[in-house]
Image 1: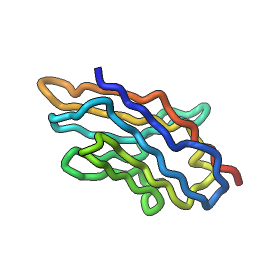
Image 2 (image 1 turned 45 degrees about the horizontal axis):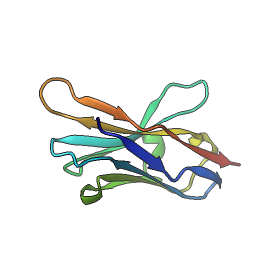
Image 3 (image 1 turned 120 degrees about the vertical axis):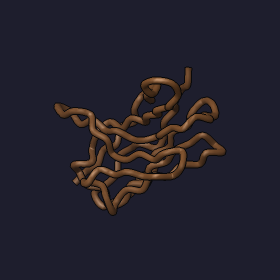
Length: 119
């Protein structure tokens, strides 16, 4: 069972920056996708950004140009660099790992890290 350990959340003023990190407990050899989702109070969980093991990235429209996702496969770690933060970015951020094998992909989640942006 793969475990994901997140770090880097916190409180920041609007316009500031934070970097989130998520480390997987083991090396994944299958095709996989690591990403970040977020959930604000009273709202559904939404995709923020993800990156495949091949390096292809995908971003929510609301964060394009402000957030950058990248990964270090040697460290089994994915990062989310968040710049120009806005109060509406405040949410609990979850790391996600999807691993493709036979059948539907396996899905793993981190415990969540809080990001709070003050105005």
